[in-house]
Length: 534
Image (tube, rainbow, N blue to C red; front, side, top):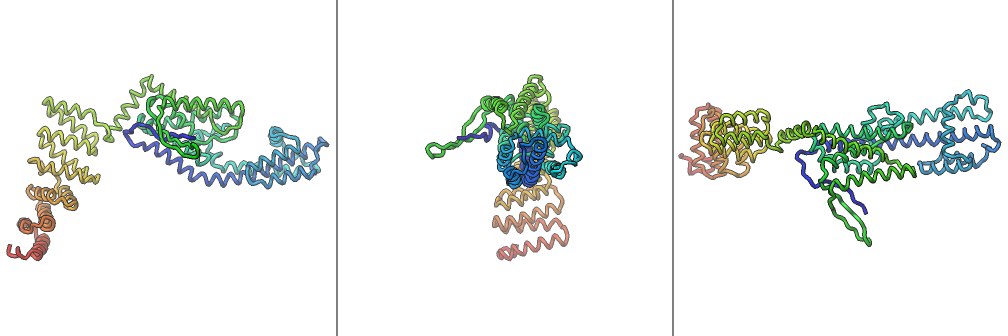
């Protein structure tokens, strides 16, 4: 049986672009790094097995020089060294190492101690040895240098956080984007999605990003301080995600986390979803990390950075509690988040209701002035423009309605929200004295779209409105021609179509326009011969 978190039972005000970006970055880095890791790890393994075999040869020769019980020429010992050099993976290598060391009566600690001893020696220490040890030592030194170079080319070692190399400050952040395999990556990204989206929505993108990176760096520091001599790199985003989980526990204490479960019962599969509140699941996860850390300290043998998880979660809880208790969140973070939501059109500007109250109190000029400030702050917020236009219309402010509706219409057209633009245009032309200030080019585009949508009657109203207002002769002529086409081909009314063309001709725009009008008239009369004399 297993269950995994897949989301939360809550809605977001804004799209979690940062969380999606972090997940995408981790995936892109994985796509690039995984093939490189496979390639470099293979080279590291090949060098490492040669170095270990050479190291054991040196150990045997060195001990046999001072202890007659060691006989290097023993064919079993020599054969075991060759077996080490033939291994194809780390499991085989470990098995052959154990076999060789059992023959020699040494332990891994003995081998590590001897390696440290060799690092302090030079070729001069073996120059007079008759057993070829000088050549073996030179080969060992070459393999050590080659092994180090191979590891340095491994992205996990170059960008991972190595406790013995904490001076590489950039690795406190770069290690957060590296992962050891597909399941490591998917597990971390799943937890990041569950807690990251809502935290980003609550704190805003920049504060959440700073918190995420700082939490990951602090978790990495805690991991390093438990053994500053370790050369094993820490990789993965789990420290930063643990910090987010800690903050989530405080910030969204009651939020329900959605889980997917699957289990087999008498060979029959069962699956589904259920919910647990954050205050149940996340503290339980933290306690689990504490228990596992205690067990691994006692038993050993785990490659999971439990202390990084514990420190990350604790730092997240501390930051979230501190931000709440000190009032920092209410004074600095929440107002910024609300402002971003207002700018995105998710929340209504609080000044909007204030301006409406002014109108209701008869303070019209003050209300218009406040509405204008709202528009100036967010000139491209189409929804706000539409809302203000409706308020002006309902309060009989025709001049203001005329201006704002025209502006809103243009913004809607730029965003290709033609349905809304058409609705606003039709409402505008039905208000007396409103259409004269609406850009006729915008109305022409809306009329064309309505015609394409087979909404001939509404397109007719738009074109007719253009012809009835004071526009340039060219615009008026264009509207008459479009109206004539609509009347003839969509509304099957050739008589009125010809009348529209007659009015277009009377504008006297010159030969080019006369030819266009004449060409359309001829086409209509050819299609409807009964109107040839009209």
